[in-house]
Image 1 (cartoon, helix red, strand yellow):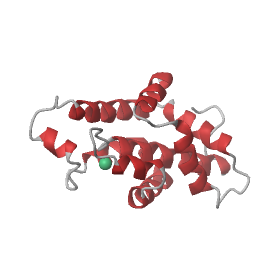
Image 2: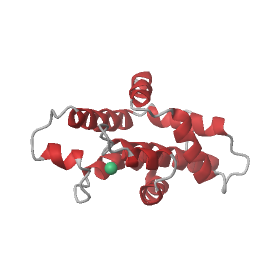
Image 3: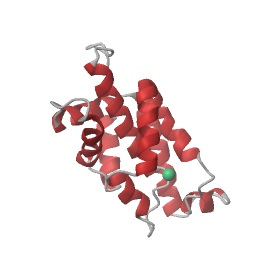
Length: 162
Ligand code: MG
C-alpha cells in the first residue's frame, strides 16, 4: 500500500525528495546533525500508517475527480475553485497530523501559512490540475514527518513502533 501511495503522489508531480526538503528545513534548526536521509526515513514511516494512507487516497481521489468534472455540484465548483471557506481539505489533512500530536499540528499550521517549497508550487498550479486537497496532504505529510523526528529525538517513539 505504501508503494501505491508513493506512486500516486508521483503521478501528481510530487517527489518524496521535495517533501524531505521541507522536513529538513523545519527540523534542522533543532537537530543540526539531521540528514536528508533521516527526513526521507521519517516520511516513509508516516506513509506506512493506515490512517495516513486513507487520508491521502481520499484527498487525491477528490482532486482527480474534480479535474475530470466527475463530482456533483455544488461540490465540484467548490473544490475546483479551492474556495477559501470550504476547509474540508485542511480537516482531512489533520487526520495525518493527528497521528503525531501537537508538534504535527503546529507544523501543519505553519506550512499552511508559509506554503513552503512544493506546497506553494502546488497551491499556485491553477490550470487543469486541481490541488485543493493535494497541497494540504503534502503539508500534513511534511508536518507529521517533522513531528516524528522531534519525538524520536526525545525517545518518545519506541523503536518497534511503525
Ligand atoms: Mg487546500
